[in-house]
Image 1 (tube, rainbow, N blue to C red):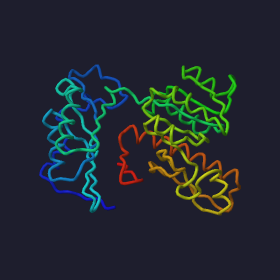
Image 2: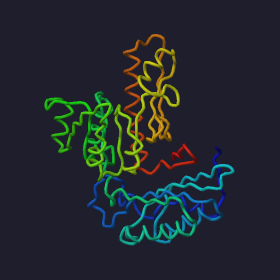
Image 3: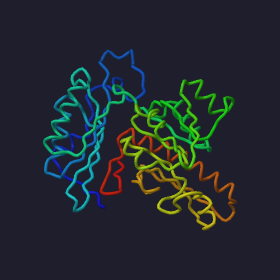
Image 4: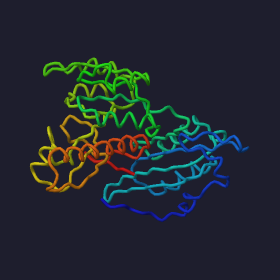
Length: 327
């Protein structure tokens, strides 16, 4: 795939900044500046996927500029010989001049004009945080790191519940943390014949997406269809190599010099969904299996956090059959 860069008379406007002091700009999670007399600007993100055509960038720019908004950055991708267009724009605007509902209507009109397959806009300071459910088995490292990142405000999500097929006593670190923060913990003992998927569906019905933080059960096709939303999985291996169980042991036995982790969307085919993020770490003949696994776990935690952030910031778009565009 090649990146296609376009020359357009409107491009210089895309990266202009608002003629207002940056004290009035509200980025996600920042408090209001009471010393500024100007109404605060808000930060928005818009992604667009449609058949390729002349003038899309200009129309997107005009949609934002006509309401007093300014684009801070824009990424455009047009794959060679595919006749499709992808873009992601970050912009600032005055919510008093461009109300949130009106913004949705304006971008919807644009999507109808270009028969868009996807047009999504988010304003983190005005929109609700993504609600997620977390599924985990025995190993805690990804879950603990996720909870820590959430507690520090580094993940723009609300965790509605944690579900596990492994029992954790009331005095464990994870159980105490969840109880302290009011996050329900559900232990569902699974067997080969009963994966408790019906109960899981009931518990996650109000979530926006699911995170499998080392959940070692295979979700059925019926579950995926019934849930109908995205599910992000962390695989402790550099896919497509070392699929299935014990990928760290597989990689160790193979004598690899680079290990990695992969976050991907869950599909019916095991460990074969579209890849969101991948990270690597170097190992050598001096590593034993224990240090090998420790390095692998550190990469897994970072990779999962990065994938959740990318997803929430609308940086991930489906592309072709089993690929993604990640801005």
